Image (cartoon, rainbow, N blue to C red; front, side, top):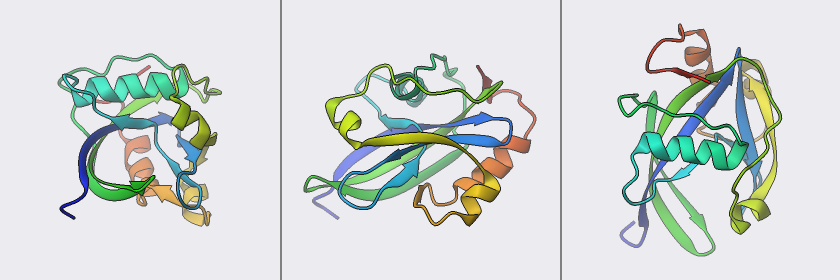
Length: 157
């Protein structure tokens, strides 16, 4: 994996009650569902990147405190347009009072081309679906985080 581009990213588990918002996109293979988020820009903290990406991809503006801890961290390898990425992802929880229709505020041309839609999912729906999800254990994360008492570091928007 010496040819892989190292990349750090921040993602958001956006939870409304017992549902999580996932974005459906397609790059170089079959479509998949994933949480809002993306690459951390130079000089940006993971929390700032997660909040920025959430706004760009959903239109929801939040501030994630610098002291907020990631609720899930993982490493993955993926490829797009002939480039392989070795990516470190940190996930932060943001809770909202109710589901809403997303209105992306600042998608790049590549993001617009990849975007197929979005949907709020329950854990049972995730567990019985034949769709592809990132992270694969998203149902377990939703179960754990949707039942946790909403206290710091879990932001409520």
